[in-house]
Amino acid sequence: MAKELIALVCLALATPAMAQLAEQVDLKRPERPVPGADEAMIVLRPHAPGMVGDNRILFYRYDPATGKVAVDAKGQPVGTKITYSYTVFGGKKGEKALRVAILPAGDYVLAGRTFNMTYTDVFCLGAPLFRVQPGSVTYVGDFEMLALEKMADGGRRNAMRYSSDLEGARQQFAAAYPELSVRLEGWQPANGATFQCLGDEFVAYEVPESGKP
Image (cartoon, rainbow, N blue to C red):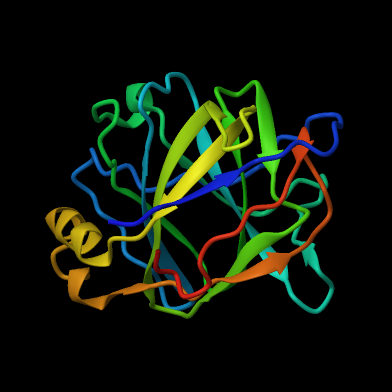
């Protein structure tokens, strides 16, 4: 399976801003919520060779007309956070861990990631933008988190390797949501969405726009 390795190149440093974001579905619980009439579900599989602690992938609600992410009354981004900590939601290091979140239908950006809660890479200089329709079940990919990965130029940078395996994800998703697995469809991202920079390190991130490697 082909993969895309995208370096997260640090371009700025600012005061941290922690998003007030909805948690993912806890798949260890027997209760399995489903999207409501105006909601959608996103599915992804983060993994990492040796990450520990509280690490997250961030999705923010986005307004294409203004080029800004939605914020609450305190100025914090609105959206969801996907935790790939193995101590919090279980799993083994290195395996692709199924993650599911329910969120209001609309436009979103893959906004960034946190590393062990020490800093946040925010993709405000260019991020994948995608839309989820009411009732949709959308697979957004597999993401491997890498710390200080060696690049082609010899330098070491934080990176996030993207890959897509819709059918593999469908099989894993079916174990948690058998009645929804047939509805799982791949996302259709468009790169280059910019927004206000709220975080520590400001970077750009791209994926293949077809959603396939």
